[in-house]
Image 1 (cartoon, one colour):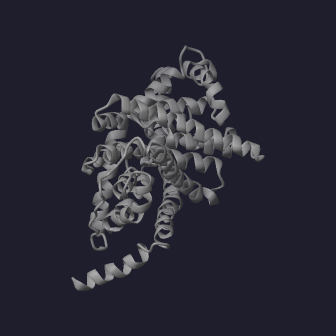
Image 2 (cartoon, helix red, strand yellow):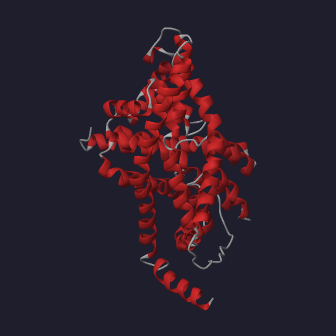
Image 3 (cartoon, one colour):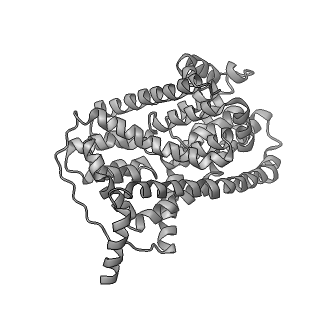
Length: 397
């Protein structure tokens, strides 16, 4: 209707303002992460209580007659890992619901228009920004979404930067680490800083390689009118995303936790750094020590190659503790600059296995896929090194 068109034009006058538009966009995204932090984090405690009750009242009595090693495998090898990841499900649900509201309202497509001029200078366009935003749910559909681009150069450059998006799997890792090593009052701000850092990584990458992947394709976008998303629409979209997330992650998490248990319990009788896992972590210490990441966290990152959802679950298995006790262990042994360096590395380094396979399927090139993996790994190490050594030089511990 004419009234809807007029209202859309008035709102656009503010939200697409050449000066105010971008600050308002980033303010909106900060509010998303603030809500995720302030509302989602307490829900994690409720889930911890629930999984703790299930373990004590239902699982332990059933497995009590079994041999000790089998009990340890079932509790510390499978249950603790799965329960730790499950404790973040309400937070992930909230994140997907908030992103669904932004998308269904019509604002997300406007962010593409808002960012187009800036993205054009990097050899990208507004569609690349939309794909980056889609990557905050999961990198896989974002990579598949590049099919709408006719220019192969634009597709490849966009696919090179999408894996830096702070996906839902990384989000749970960051919330867990930030809650353990930072004062709670600063949590939302620290989380938002990682969101901004994901854009910085994408911008640096695009700036470096825009000369290699030259794009000549014009950008045209139709802006739909604003609409108020219905509760039913938002909940259905949110549930669909969460269902996909859980289906995709559950197999990887179970496999990862079982694998971590075996390498942290072999050879028989060995504990801590004397196990196979401990030896792997120590072997990589010369590379990881300069960026402040200890052998336990290093091992968790290795399993993050399979799926980022495994990182927190694997920490529970590595330490043989539930999520509350693991969080306390991190608080006691990891400083805030080490924790933030770990988050930087986890944000930028090689994406999960599903993303890698999708990247290859879309790019149709092993060389490009391998280049993307090696580059992201190198960039992650350099970024963490600059932060960690810079923080030490400034006197932070």
